[in-house]
Amino acid sequence: MINWKASDEDKALIMKIGMRALKIYKAYGIETDLIEIQMDVAACHLNGNPLLLRDMLEADEFNFMHDISGIARHINQKNGHLENCFSPRFSV
Image (cartoon, rainbow, N blue to C red; front, side):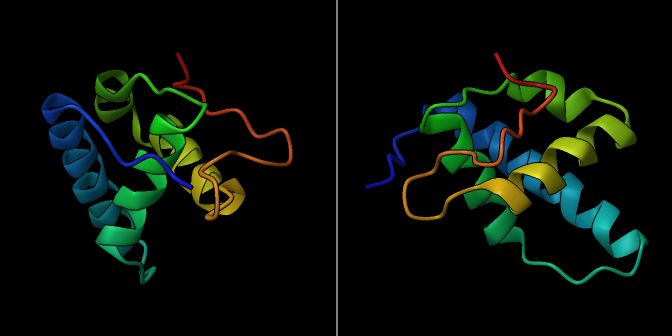
């Protein structure tokens, strides 16, 4: 079962991260879903791979999208764990 209990501060940062990622995806003509991005980041952060959310949000586009796209590709949506040895750059 995935833990979804984030602090209010983490929720706000995850929302901003999702909005930034969505804007970047759209700039490159890639269709995606805001809620899906936010859920992937939250699941990763709250279930075994805590993230430096503020640092991620403020990162340059290349490193930011490395983590966003890597989390999306490697998250196990049943338990929130990252698979295939992927490690976000903004892990704690």
